[in-house]
Amino acid sequence: MEVLQYALRKLVSGIPLILGVTFVSFLLMVYFGPDQTYELLGKNPTQEQIAEIRHQLGYDKPFVARYADYLRELVTLDFGHSNSTGEKVSALLGRTIPVSLVLVLPGFLLGNLLAIMLALLAAHFRSRWPDKVIMGFSVVGMSISYLIVIIAFQVIFSSSQGLGIFPVRGWNVHSFGDYIDYIAVPTMATVFVALGYNTRFYRSVIVEEMTRDHVRTARAFGVPPGKLLYRNVLKNCMIPIITRVVFSIPLIVISGALLVESYFGIPGVGKVTFDAITTGDQPVLKAVVGLTAVMFVLAQLLTDILYRAVDPRVSLG
Image 1 (cartoon, rainbow, N blue to C red):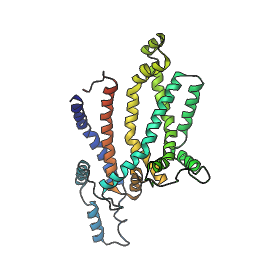
Image 2 (spheres, one colour):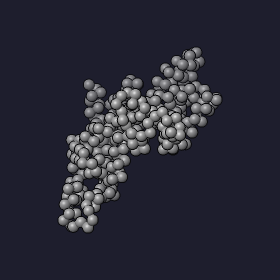
Image 3 (cartoon, rainbow, N blue to C red):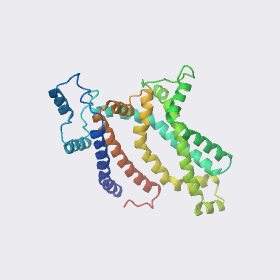
Image 4 (cartoon, one colour):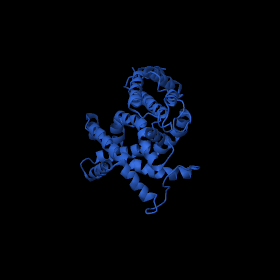
C-alpha cells in the first residue's frame, strides 16, 4: 500500500515535467519544424488548396488549441495518423516499439553486466596491470564513434569481404535462430561502445566505496576478496548503478535504436523516428517526444522504488 501511494504521488508530481517537455518540444515543432503544406500540394497551388491542406493538417488552429489537442492525444494515446504513410500512429508505435525492445535489450543488459564485472575486477586490482588493461580498453571504446563501430562490425561479420556470417540489413525474423542472426552485429557494436562508458563509471563508484571505513574493517577481519566485493562493496554501490541503468532506458530505446535501426534498416521505433524527422511527420514526432517524457517520469518512479528494495533505509516519503 505504501509503495502504491508513493507511486501515485510520484506520477502526479511528474506531470509538470511532462507538461514542460511536451510544451517546449511542441513549440519547437510548430515554429521551427518543417511545414508539410507544400509537400502535399502540386505545383502552383491556389490559395483555396493551400487553405484546405493547412486546415486538414490543423495548421490554421491557434497554438493553445493545438497544444491542448496534443495533450489530449497523449492522455488517450490517440495521435491520429502519420502524415507520411497514413497509418494510425498508435498502431505504428505498437508495431515498432517491440522490435526496438528486443533489438536493444540484449546489448543493454550485456553492456551493463559485463561493465560491472570488469569494474569490480579493475577496482580489485587498482593501479595494477589488470586495471590498466581494462581502463585502456574502456578509453578505446569511448574514443571511437558509435557509427564507426557499427560500420566496422558490419564489414567484419556481415560483408563478403569479412566473415559474412550474419545478415547485412533487414529484419526477416521467423524463428529464434533468425532473431540471433539479426541482433548479433548490433548487439556486439552496442556492447563494445557501452563497455567503455559504463566500466569507467562503475569503476569510479566501486573504488570510492572501497575507501569506506566499513570495507577497510571487513578486510582487516579477513573477509575473503570475493565476499568483500559482493557484500560490502557492490551492494552499497547499487543506488548509483540503478540510477545509471534505469535512466538510460528511455534514451536507449529511442536514440540508441535510432542509429542502429536506420543503418541496418530494422523497422523499429528508432527508424520510424528518423523517417519522421526527415519527412517532418509531426504526428509521429509528437507521439515519440511525449511518450519519451512519460518514460522518464516512470524511470524516476522505478528508480526510487528500487532504491528502497536494495536499501531499506531509503524512505519513500
